[in-house]
Image (cartoon, rainbow over all chains, first blue to last red; front, side, top):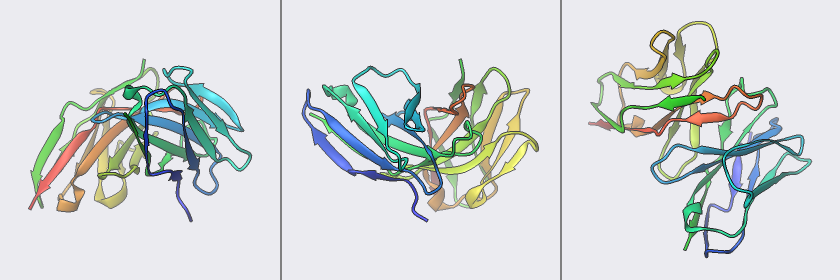
Length: 114
Length: 114
């Protein structure tokens, strides 16, 4: 049973560029949440997708956008990259159970903005 | 607003000794609490959760956590630490919205010395 997978593992971008990160949820899961983990910090919630719609959004600017596909996989897009966007981006999947069950996290994508 | 505090940046214990990693929370309503562990360059791994019921929750790898409502605490414990338990530990509380987004503490680094 494959767990949550994310690609790419590492990414280096220049300020002002755009980036797309990808996530495939654990088998049987239909909900995908994205978190940003800055160095030395706990993960911060970006947004959650369920039934191909954004269900909730954290305190992140509109430069952060996402998408969920019919097979439940998801993308996170960040436009006009800033140095402060450098972080580990974590994808977590769960069933649409309103959070009573645990979220399973992928290994993350390390984004470096120079 | 919901929040989680992990008062210790680092906990040092000797192998074979009991360990405790502290967590306090602030929520409106009943808390849903989680512990995750993160190894270097890895995503978060679920350890255990408290939803309701017995105040002592048992989880993976011999870890357990004690829920204390009066002290609003959810401390992670293990009777006998292993060197391989050395990692970064995060306490999280479920948001009261219908998405179940997680609000994480800052994390505590556990160092187990031989």
